[in-house]
Image (tube, rainbow, N blue to C red; front, side, top):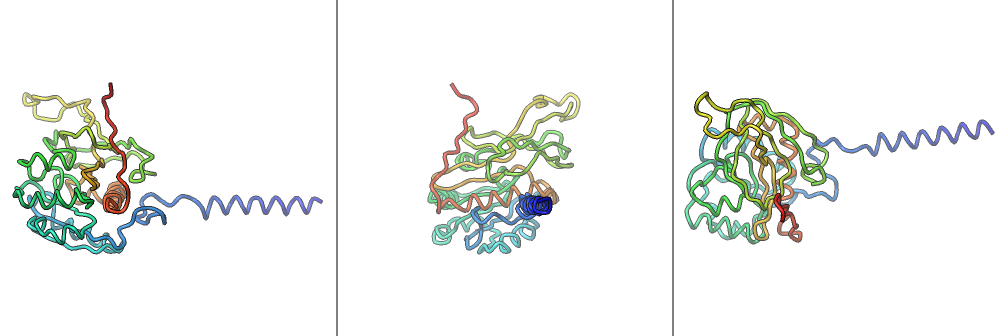
Length: 279
């Protein structure tokens, strides 16, 4: 009888070991996705880079494009925004990734970009390459969901806080810190779904006597997603330095955001409006 009980006990603990070891959650920093998660495999991606050199547009191609292709995406790279006027290419595109700081976009170029997104093409990017482009085009800013206005303090250490742990883009990611990089202060669309925020918590963000607008204590959306027509928009304000993507959480969120945004043509629109102020 004792021998039988010992065998049962051994079998029980073997079963528990199997559950803990073989079925343990995949590390969040892996770029692999669960079988039912969005994927870039077979997706058509247009990668557009250029504009202000300070945000490393060409270097971003070397960093990001190989990762997209390794996942099975069909990526076409362009260094001119005139590609937005190519109606056939735009209609065949699942995702546009833009890293183009500042500059101007013509009426026809914007119309081509907007039409593609309205029809379901995703639009994604980071930092100034998406959130500080085409400053004179208000409709572009509406489409993105926010617009850069300042980075108080310059390159500083600051904390990123996750606020939507249930969203697949953020799932499994905890709060983390960035070192010596820009903390964006932005004008924000209230119809974005905010996934991560950052608080301005330093005692001083500008030179003595020039702090005309004290921002200490303010909280700012950092990562968000939104709808625009049938298209999905994903944005992260992190990424002034290309080395910011060495932080595993930053790259993981960005890749997941690409995957989510690329699915606009294949799934019903999500209801992701989450108003902060309610009556």
